[in-house]
Image 1 (spheres, rainbow, N blue to C red):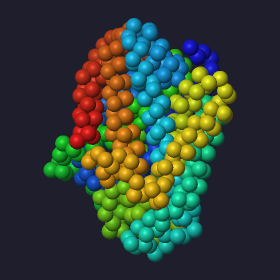
Image 2 (cartoon, helix red, strand yellow):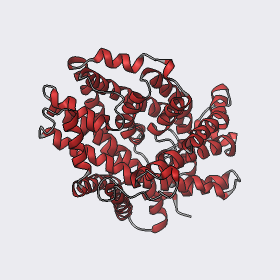
Image 3 (cartoon, one colour):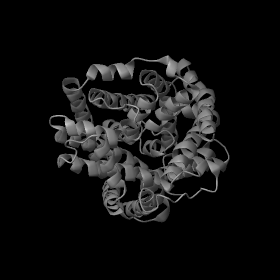
Image 4 (cartoon, rainbow, N blue to C red):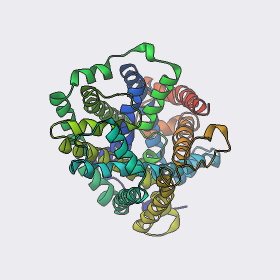
Length: 456
């Protein structure tokens, strides 16, 4: 069994909060949330999304932090410790292994999408979007996807930045980076919203985001809102269990969980307020889909005054958000390797990062030289899915909800009342009963519904 002294601890509560919010805030907030909201009716979807964050997301995040702090090691060692403490089966180690495998696999394709953002920072600054219409923007993005060497280079740059931060450790790496990137992220986001107020159709954006049309709500839309809430918060990824292991006892976990959930949601809403006024103000389609950020927005940036500056700011924002999350993805893997392989952290970070980059090459190639490859094409459900599509499906639709489900069940049913009360710092009252009820009954049902619906 590895010694807990292998790991550093957070230097302060603000440093931990910044890192944890950074791990949650990512492409899910600024890339995925706007196009998912745009495709699913705007206001009604947003209302559901916020409700699910408060009802389910925050309680599960708090449970992850509690499990991490009580186990005090990497996700795998934490689950070994917790199973022993609670006199449960060592089969619960599955949570730990998923909490390492999910972020590692996720990083292989997450970094490819993040690499597009870095490329677009420089393209926007060079004025490449000037005069773009829809066809020019689509062709420009297609040109990026068709260039394996261009994508490989930026994929390498993004992974290298992630490895550099994680290799330096908790205090010199993670803390120092988030103290710069998280304030910068919020400042850029607020500047983008201010620009939308002044120069775009802000009223139309607000109406789209906050005027609910309940006629658009269907069961798939409800499940999509629930899935987006959990995806955005990085529930089940493993980062919160890992970050929780570095927490001292004097930090309130319920308070930390609430701050993480609220801050993450605020970022998503602000992203919507920055993006939709531009989209609607320039007569573009808010339901564009995944191409909303990389195809639709460059059209707006290419037409507006000062678009090169505004576009560069936006893609820097997207890069920072992706990087703070990728750090949280690599850390669980490095934490486990530190305990069990006996090498220094820089070697472990470089090794894990190299694996993510190497596997990520298959994701890069799935957009160009391997675009016709269908790895699971023998199955009807996967007959049209590329390597990227298959990886994204298994990580986001199968592994994430499964791990979140297992975490909720373990915290709600397997951990004793005394253990959870001790970690939460609560008395045995109404709020604890609510938290326990959510984990024991509501979360498993909701997560089970997501899991089943993804298999249809």
